[in-house]
Length: 572
Image 1 (cartoon, rainbow, N blue to C red):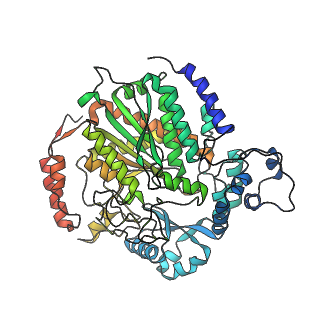
Image 2 (tube, helix red, strand yellow):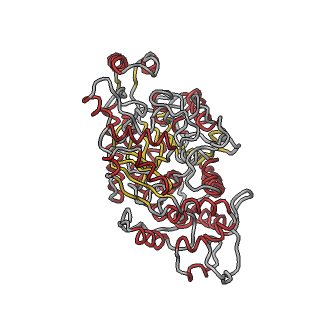
Image 3 (cartoon, helix red, strand yellow):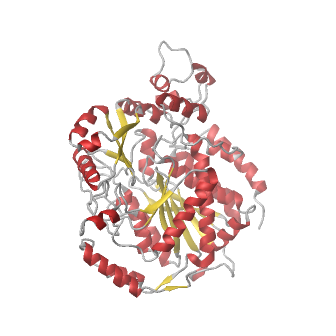
């Protein structure tokens, strides 16, 4: 195995040129100008962030006011966000969750996050009073303002030349919020300092991936592939990373290796998920000659990294609306475009409380795979398995709340046959993420809402909790059920609410390191054959489980019969 040390130096130089000299055609151009001329009044953006004036004298091409000058729609949306806040409701009963779900559906509110402790909702300040009017009094007295100045938090996430810590510290002091983590950050060196200093637009990500492909594919380590095309015709790029198989490492037919799939950017505004996928991919590439465990993992598995599964939405979040969540596909209501890709996959798509309102942030379509990007991923995965690939793991990265979630998402009543193993791996993923930087990640089933359904089912027979957001049609359920990826997880990255989707760029590297350490554990676990169980008749048994609208007793009986038919072979 040849060393990549000598390749890294020209790679860093070329990448530096890409990021500092020019961008490819079609990219967002950041014009270089002379020193800024004094203005009679401060720009809207500068007044918004209240940065010290000397910072703007540097004349950097990444001066944020220049960025906004070339994107007037961003300024327009920032003005709208001036009057919006994020509220956290502490939810502890099923009645509370049901009341919030009704309010969300009635007022078409944007749910940022929900766990077993809280629900975060974004709305205009003028709508707070009407919202409180339809909620029970116990909820009216049990909430707090999480982000009082949304416009300022949004503006701070775009690339700037100010030190990231000074930006976030200024915001934290102004908002009275303690930073999410005070642990010292790792030293940034080489490409880390160039590419991961800021969030990157889609054009730069594509160029970076092409550069990795050209620099390292000669030894067979990296290959850039396309998962398919988005609704607007953009490529959905991916990096397939793995050491070419020899006679001792080939698996499956035709020498195709078992595969781990890692996706990010299903929801456009979750920029940290995209940056983290890229960071972990780069970490595996640069460590292959330095870390024997990484080499062993890549000898036995291919890892396919898809940083932006929703490229149309991601580009829109850079050019127009930072908080855009869905895809950009037309719906039956022309003024409410976009599908929630994580509710667009085919397995149990309409299992529980399916959202049929196109203007809802969780609208997954009127039928399975109506969303182009979800269908493209499914078609690609099907083609891979038809050609002898076996998916042994799937990690779908999101933000925020610092959770490791495992199937099923659509229901808490039906449990996966390998539940104990799923829980064990989830706890260890959380453990290795915590050991990296001290951040605590919790684990639970992806079906859980603000109120655990199991608790409710114990208290009220034949009743299932009303979730704040329906869970059918998720990516992890689909990959788990349809392609036998027996270790499928949705990982919600930093933070726990101080910044939400607007995590400052200084946390890109620490968050990436957390997932990198978790991925090393994950690969090591799968090397022990723990990821290669043979489940007899598993697909047939699950196909016989009947339609998604079974009542609770029938569904439980089906699950019991399915478990009896399954036999685990070679489990450790």
